[in-house]
Length: 148
Length: 221
Image (cartoon, rainbow over all chains, first blue to last red; front, side, top):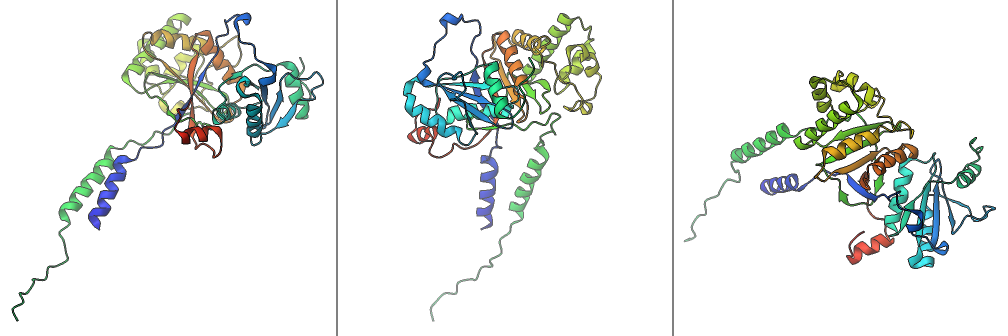
């Protein structure tokens, strides 16, 4: 019994590796590419996800309506369902546009990128937030719009 | 009556030899293990399903702590340390800091660079214990006008010319996005379009597309 126990102990000592941190790869776009050379995305397949403060997530499909009627609030739990629904709807046209605002955290950003790989969204882009979208987020969060 | 008597053996075995070996191994492992040094810049990395192990050589590690301070360090290998020296020399020349060779050596041995370029001379005179994320101001990159990460990455790209440079970004959960964006700007300015972000591995949630892909054995993107 002792030698079996001893064998097991040595086996596990030699085979264990400490949990190593993993790395997530991200390729950045080249900003120098001329706008006319950039790919246009189809509005029908576009899903824009906006990240706000306190882990708030907002999204809209296609283009943001002038009255903001398609601007919807969500969170990290339910955004996955939205992505899945959109993915089934749009099929190959799906492009997810991620726009974090200044209040969002690094964790939010990683989480949403992770959501992309969890749902196997092949095409996504990180884009700077526009002032209109930022204002909608701040309005929804109940904060006055930043003074420009 | 013709049955031979089987000699009864004692159940005691001599375990002295085994204990000696076990004890030797135990003491060997205890003495050779190096404890992870307590981190000067504590960072809680976010979790992700990424399953690629972070590289450990030829790396330029950019840490982003919870206060949004940025620190720069390199890998542990000798090659990396030499490259760090090259980088410090390049920065020294570019900004006319007038660092002595002793100060350059001290900075090379320092676990990380965490001050604006103009204060490198002061950091060179600090002891390792004094260099913590709380006391050092971090490399300024919070506004686009004074983004010194651009200079550092440019120096790193020159130092690692002809070799693969792994840009690693290690950010804290609560670090704000704008600082991260400014680091990305520094990458882009130096035409470094690929980098990796350190995360803690978690398992893929059941029932998702990636989960199904992994089950069916398709390669992950």
